[in-house]
Length: 408
Image 1 (cartoon, helix red, strand yellow):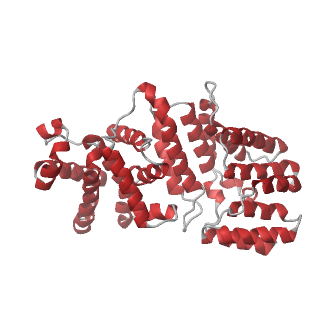
Image 2 (tube, one colour; image 1 turned 90 degrees about the horizontal axis):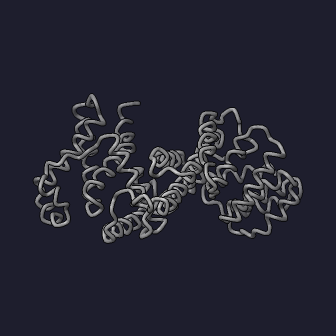
Image 3 (cartoon, rainbow, N blue to C red; image 1 turned 90 degrees about the vertical axis):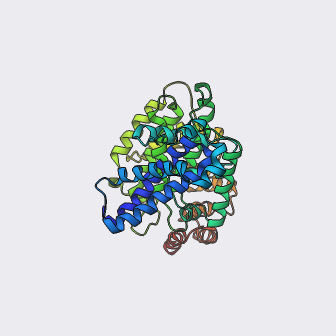
């Protein structure tokens, strides 16, 4: 990695770790202080490394500075002592030299516990995902705003409200009691699922696929998988689903970042190692009698990694969609089911099903109908693709739709 690329890379990978450990150490009441310490650490790195060059061990250097900044605040900062002293833990006041544990094990534990804290029901789903992106993933405000098709001000307000709720509700950082983990883990999984989907079905102005969001969701889900207290069949199923989807990343977009239709993907670009990992965790998820939406979606994703295009493949996909829509209906799921139905019973049957959905302001609905009408009724195909242009959210999507119009 080039020298000028190292610090931005470390900010993405280490900022979130430092924040998690500091907040676990001091509590959510001092979240803004933790963010200041982490930000100052990287500011000092930018200034120092620019003059003196890279240290021998950059990550260890950052951790040392973060620890020292934390101790300095406790020892010397008068404003910190006067305003925040009453809220500090008694043991920290008694021993301001308490060391910040930035060992790999404590970082993992802190991030795992932070996941549960940020998925507390006092927070809205929007706040949960925004805070996860900011605190646990280290994404910038502009990146988050772009992902949600909004502006910096809106995201800053969302983050501020979320942090205030964490503070005023006195949310504790720590794994819930064993009997509570199973109740709370659905909220954690939902947040990670939404984070992955925001990357996979990106609404960003700049990209239709945000691999970085997806990989962060996979990293955090991996922490749940690795911990005996938090691992269960739903966790394994969600991780399998992510692996199957991620296995087709390289085949899913072209060099211009435009989506490539599933039928046109180069299967040689599919990642066999990720497919194999998905198989392992899907099999692992089958223990017990539970059948969650993640199990069904992982099953659908599994069949999509089957290179042999057969009637059996699409019949299995269709049946899985039927089950999924019964327990967790979504417009995207219904649209995808219609595509699977077309592969078995033909376009005419699929058109009848698709038009029942009536998603008139959804560009994906019109894209699907544009494809279904192609070769059946060209005028109808053009009509729906023109509607898709109107409702498309990004320029990248519009470029793809215009290409389809040109072909029709």
